[in-house]
Amino acid sequence: MGLDLEFSNGQTPIDEDEKEELLIKSISTLGELDEFEQHNVEKAIEWTLKRKLSADKILTEDFVIELHKRMLGHVWKWAGQFRTSNKNLGVDKLEIRVELRKLLDDCKFWIDSQTFSEDEIAVRLSHRIEKIHPFTNGNGRHSRLLADILVSNGFNKQHFTWGSVNLEGPNLAREEYLSALKEADENNYKPLITFARK
Picture 1: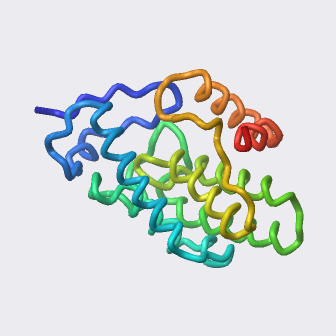
Picture 2: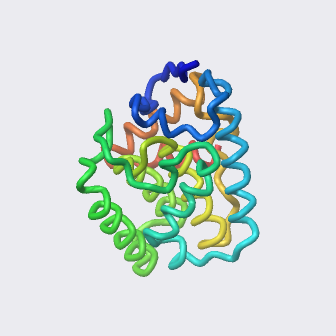
């Protein structure tokens, strides 16, 4: 039985060869996949809650990779590995490491120079890493969790709520989120910051 996935607006399709790296072969629908992935994401959140993480520790390539691996590593072989194919969004696969390094360096500069508010720094991190799209899949969830970790551990503030709903399936909150991302693409971060705290 093959993995039958229908992706909604804004989701990154998984190539056939990438589907072959599913670790739980009994999964056959997107709903089942979402359940297993969500359970794995919750384990990653527990892992982060048990650590005291500084902004310097969070803003490293190693941490970015480790977080993705912990989020999806029990479901996908490619978890925690930069994607090896180009997708419908994101930078070219060969530019991922360079763009990620630029982002992490920018983020450290914003913190050191207090260029933006702490919420805006975390939201900019989330937005830019999602635009880079470093992984095969799970980039949106990864980017939001990374921002949550930075704002809660790095800045000692309340984590974001991101609309207080599941943003993976089609719903009004997802449409609002995607609209806020488009505004951020135009360098207007206010709607995304508002949504993150909604």
